[in-house]
Length: 162
Image (cartoon, rainbow, N blue to C red; front, top):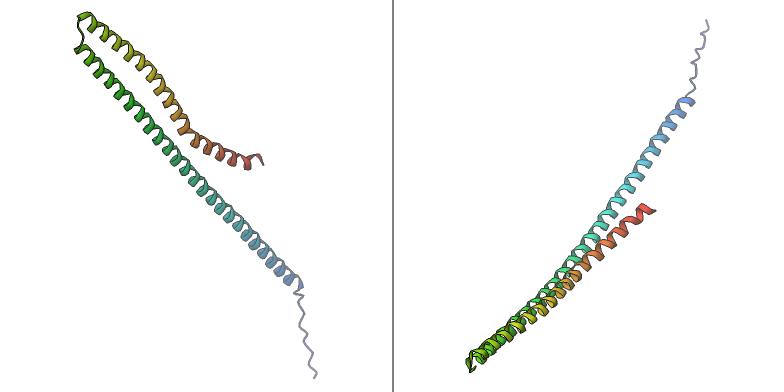
């Protein structure tokens, strides 16, 4: 008796191999795309952090400069006010000496009137000077902060315009 040969049917695995290869390729592409996006996002975040650090340093520098300008301006203003007070005190002492040597009551009244007039005129002139100095100090104090603000706004508007 002859035994019949059994033939095993051959299964064509090519479609399955192709499907596995395509799936593997899709996964690799997805991983590569995800990796690329993560790298881009990380780089953007690091650049934003670096930009923020630079803006922060520049802002602090502007505030320090503004503080120095204000301190110097207030020092000058204080010196001016002290000099005015000193000159007024000297004028009072001088007028008092003159009143002590006055021969008549009319002379005393005239010295007092001259003193009041000169002190009023000096006060008006000094007030104008102090007002101008204060305005100058305020403007000079704001300049570094305003300049820094302008720079930051311009830098931030560039990406929006692009």
